[in-house]
Amino acid sequence: MPRPVVIVGGLVRREKLERWRRASNLMIEWVTVDPSAAHASRRLAQRIRAGGVLAVVVLDGLLDHASFVPIIAAARQLNILVYFAGRAGVARVAQIIAELGNGA
Image 1 (cartoon, one colour):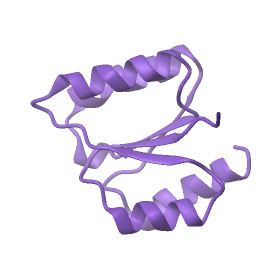
Image 2: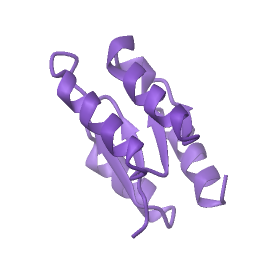
Image 3: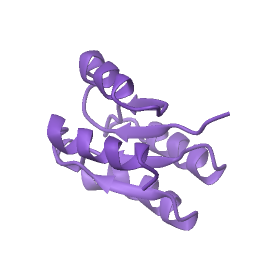
């Protein structure tokens, strides 16, 4: 089963997500992480540690630091690629997706 690229932060924008999926051959998920609900960060960190994620794209401009630190720590433990994409700019995320689709 292919592992997904997981976009973390902000609100899921279905139109952007579908555009990125169509532009690549990658499974892409978008996870909203609410700062008041730390369980979402912990759950994603557990998935990463279990080897269930290809790469993580952190929308760091839309998350507080405490929300994404455990996610990045889990990814780095397994040498999983971590990208930072600010506030989910279409061009930046598209560039990351293209790099991953080309075997980055």
